[in-house]
Image (cartoon, rainbow, N blue to C red):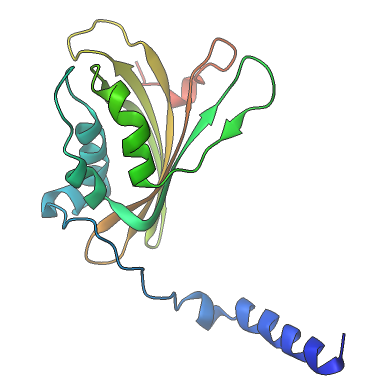
Length: 185
């Protein structure tokens, strides 16, 4: 490698580490997502409530996918952890559109997910939420068919809240929810 090439690479590395550059992000990509209802994106609590509300519903009741889309940042990802019977666990990165395509058939059979506990950490404009959930086919079911944790990253741009990612794992017989992530008695 020539000296001038090394100098350019070193300059790029120094610029990447610059606090000024780290605080000046590129403009967000254009999105075709509809405008959100202001109440849905007014706070961290509001956007989480909207997320759970929009995916929940009785069998045969269509979800409001435009509302769902409006909650997510243009670069957002949803990432379920899969735990096969054999082999290593997997994580699959989905766009909101990928999620809609994959989840809609199951949700249309009846699906109600609700938050049962939450742990939240915030620094500046970023918020991380560990949101423990349970899932039921009908809101009147006495017992959930599934439980797990949604790890949700939120961004407050100063005008609204955005969901950047939802990364989740369901509880299994060998991976139980720890007491600190369950509702306090």
